[in-house]
Amino acid sequence: MFINVAQNGKWELNSPQIMGIINVTHDSFYESSRAKSMADFLAKAAQMISEGAHILDIGAQSTRPGADIINTDTEIANLIPYLEALKNAYPTQLISVDTFNPNVAEQALKAGAHVINDISGGSFDTKILEVVSKYNAGYIAMHITGKPQTMHQIEERADVIAAIINYMEMKKELLAKYGITNWIIDPGFGFGKTVQENFDIVKRLQELKVVNLPILLGVSRKSSIYKTLGIGPEDALNGTTVLHTLGLLNGASILRVHDVKEAKQIIQLLPYLQ
Image (cartoon, rainbow, N blue to C red):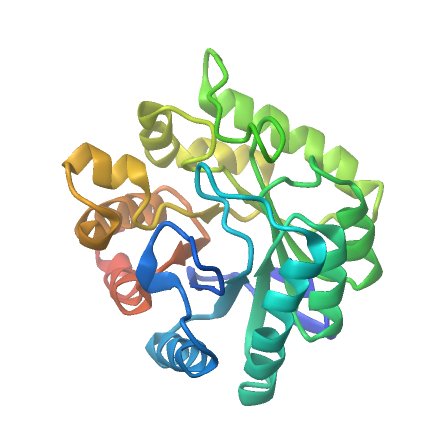
């Protein structure tokens, strides 16, 4: 399967893919994901590309619980120099930008990004869908409830998978109105869900195939893993690997990760496990 992306590109998803995370924030939950300088940013990008990242996901707005929502001008100012530097250093590298702000999304696409990774799925501001459509960008929509200030509050529901399927089917109808029909779903591990619901998402990921769109799994070093194990995110790679393996076996198309080399090794071993 191919996802059309901005800059007249295509993203092939016929085999498992790796999305490497680089944050240009000061407060993302995993410190090692933060670029401390332009040199550090480019070094992280170079390492991830060499280790097998198919796409790099750049974020200038933390979405961890309790994070402050920064204003549009600040997010753009924080993001664009890094994005332009990455584009200049690696002109053919596929780049995603993690934002729910339509103005940020547009500036990112103008600066050379290919994909918009929107945790809100257009729920915070539907103008982002206009931007994605205008630039023929790739699009990732995550399952979320609430608004930026309440997105980590847990809602009562009988079945988290049924809720995600219903949400994504409604998003299919909405996005189709903007001409967006070929996109990627993210079940939203860690966003407004109980620990058990997060683990249920990974265990039952195959059920999301009914939506008939590629699935991105973003579990890397998240709190459901490290709090369950009684450790911190810096020690959560082993637990992350367990969930990545199960997710791939259950149909994930893309792993969004902090640790590219280890994710690549899972993918290399996968044919022997199926």
